Image (cartoon, protein in one colour):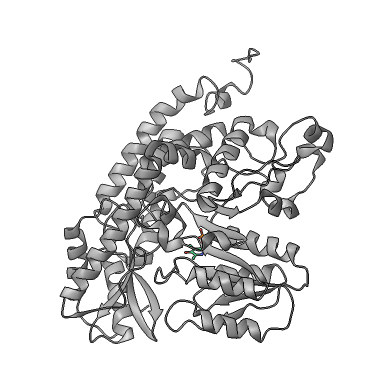
Length: 486
Ligand SMILES: *Cc1c(COP(=O)(O)O)cnc(C)c1O
């Protein structure tokens, strides 16, 4: 390494850098500060979220963070201690068993530790010369994850192009769905591409169609929460003849329901439509031998969305878009001379600019790769089984409670329920009261024309007694007609 002038004019700044051989030594005491602040904040909160509602939280944060931009800085120790503590104290913490509203998972410590290294090294995956090892690690890891989704499309190598499954790393289901619709648009023989999806499809499908200038998606009613194959066939029958993309969902955000993928695949094929499967939630069932059969039919899709920051226990962001053949990604190819000059590519430098619509891009692959290796397929599969089992236990407890109604047996790890005789207003008020009191974070979902409380179980450490306590909070909640409405 060329010697750096240690006492250069930027000496005090250099003393604060995280990288290089000296960086870890500088980070160590700061990490101690951060970890202490996290623990202190969690203790001060004392529950799944801060009590008092948005105004109380905003006031405490304002007090802690003022001045946001002081004329003279307070130093790294003080800033970390103050702001990390304030953030932790005011957080909704998915590691608490009573924080179970959304597809917000409690991340694994190993993944978070890996993310720290990603921040230190700061590789940017828009060119090989900013990220030599991260480029290679991403290629190795995405090949394995793509093969998990498309196990039968083995790497064939006729000619220069390898027709193997591939996967892009994205910021999540929203970006993956956008890319899926973009690729379908670019491959459409008879534009404009018409998207057809269930009423149960994620809102990002509609936004992506809007963003990409596609016609408004045709929506198939899903009164039972999943796409009915007969209804889908009737819809396709009546469409004008042009390129069509059917979007199915494996794990809806509201109920965790999985569309009948094999039948949908057959119908899409019969009508010459392409298929995209949004398995943002359900995709990681593939890690579990027991749960994977729920995703039979996945391989018929031209693209599959899958999130590892839901089931997968990664801190955000950890999304994937898998395709059966890397050639499908070619519409994303893009040249910028300073990043992937043609002669550099010819000379053998990997061209990574076409693996995203972003330019600067974090190595989210590192935490994913660490998790895959640390836990193995078995270990991740067991976590998946555990939260699916919890959902069944929770549903059992609800069924045993005469004052509560269960919506359906869980398909993955989402459970909808409600007090048997409550109005929708009362259901909404119960949820807000628990949020205000800082006692529980439950979600809400509309199904069968009614409002339900939603628990999305993603915490493998949750015990049956935690689930019972959560239910006790609901059954003992005072029944108000929306008096805590804001
Ligand atoms: C969460 C989710 C998305 C959006 O994913 P983000 O990671 O939040 O962008 C899309 N589709 C489904 C079915 C989801 O559950």
